Image (cartoon, rainbow, N blue to C red; front, top):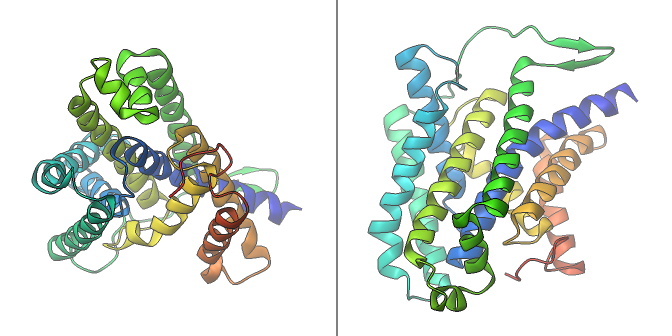
Length: 287
């Protein structure tokens, strides 16, 4: 029983990271109408942006989050102006393939600048805290607590603010939103800012939980998409639920299978959901 509870704690940590990534994927899909394959590499950019702050200022990764977010947002907006805006009227499959190409470029750029070796925000051993037989690292508190704060802030933004309501209107019916006077392109730019910010935070949290590597975001892309589809693609609240379900399932599965195959659990849940309920738990848009 103790082992199961310990794995559930690890699953909540993993689910927190997946949920932040999946919300960004869902927002981009619902507003811009294509699956953004470069989202995992935006997470990598954010993680290395945090490393820049840690290395230059000697602060903790949490304090360096603004640098990580600024770098990821700058890359996302540059991609929008240079790559995605000229292709806006193209078929979504063209945008999807373009995002795949962007992912390769970003991954290669990170590897060229930072090198292929794994890095860490700080060396040494963290003293874990014990709650009975359950062990929790201090970084895990930051990851779970930070995720809950961000989810609450996002909920208030989408439900209470003028821009949040405009984004929801564009997600439901973009043509009707445009006729109603909503500035569509401003909403697209805002979508990129929010999605890239969430990706950056997820990348920093992933770096705090494991290590930094040029392919860290790419390796997490399948579970992130599985979480988004499980919850209902295009549904931010579904992405949150999907992230925690996938994260806990992946970690608990290590009681029965080799941990090296836990990403296969996310793939299995993705396939099962596409067969049983293609629109996901929260009835999102079909792929």
